[in-house]
Length: 569
Image 1: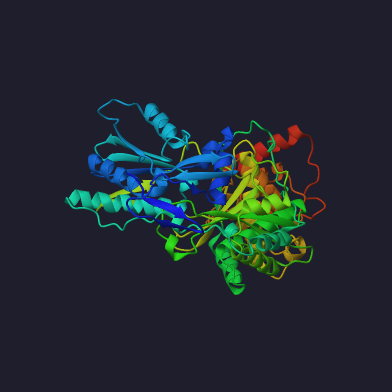
Image 2: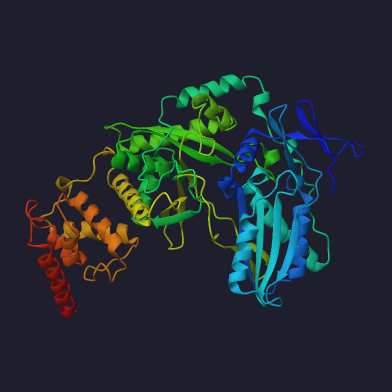
């Protein structure tokens, strides 16, 4: 499908039907940066946006395939081809190429095994595009059974973002429903992305704006002290990712969001404050740069355009030994607002000014991303036929560590949901579990007393360990954090309540921090219930961790103690 749009000097507007249809458009700074990074082989999968939707119910696969093909062919961005103009030192694109390929695989009739289907989906999701020669999108409809169908849709990030995905998926649904009824879908003519993509470097005062952002960020470390288990500088580092998540207690969530609202902070800003506070408490670093992904669609004209408008911002958060949680929330809000105000200043220009010798394969200015968790909406093809997005296997991670902040509303009360995503080779499951526990601890401390200093960890002076009820409350609250649950039974063992050896180690650290007692793993293993551990905290601080004989004696004692407990039940 040829495209008649071509740029004019200083603007991008459509020409008449007789005009040259093969003009090249200058890519935006973000697109140029993605094109360059796409050339780095190990990073290529991180610049693909794959989606796998599974439909249950009666799907007309022929109609669905036609609907997907129509939707992909309509949009100029999805017909793009890219080139490097070496003389001009820029990347250009044209939009008169052929439409993306859309296929149909009947895995039932053709006898595909589950392993073969899994390999097909992975290949569809992560096979790189040759951006100079082929459309930057592909799709496949896969029939798995009478009432199970997969739609695998992959688009390159250079022409696609999260908003675009939702727009395209919604359009597929609209087209499918129309074709099933035998009518043409009613859809507006899609605008060309070049018509609405601003190029701030062409405007007056651009250099001054870059200088202003650079000055705001100057002096901040371009690294974050992270508890790496792997080497982030390893040139062979795999970008295959891993995700771990947790939810914060409903009461704690309510208190955190209430204080955040008093300071004009969103849940995202509260997440920024919790991450900065946790890093400050665990590493001593007090000045942070965090990356944020911004939709980049402030212009209403861009709201419904499929293209790459997303941009990366960098916000700065600072604190010191006397900063309270409330003040840290204010700092997170200020840092966020400053970054959003400068959202049209390209990150590449900022990074080049602050770190001209940076490694292009590494995230610019900071290895840490903080973002809102936004799950794409399901696609309803017809009543009772709904496609849900499936987890990607494998997943790929661009940032050393990414925190996604969301709200879990499935239990009837809002609970902060915190997810950590990272290259699996950089952190073990134990490390991320510990970091999530520390984030929950920070949230609990903010909720308990927002006027307390961030660096002031709860101590025994603030908890009356002579009060049996206070001890029980303390142990219950920490069990809820470590086990990620709202309900714990005072007389059920830690392992029967869902604990494991890793969580037991975390429990030891959290109870030790909160109580001031010198606890060991074997202490909590022997006192395996909430009530038993609360009684353990009643021991004098100088004897709670006293030696109890050889390691063999302690092991036998722990086994006998647990057996005795089992006999009592």
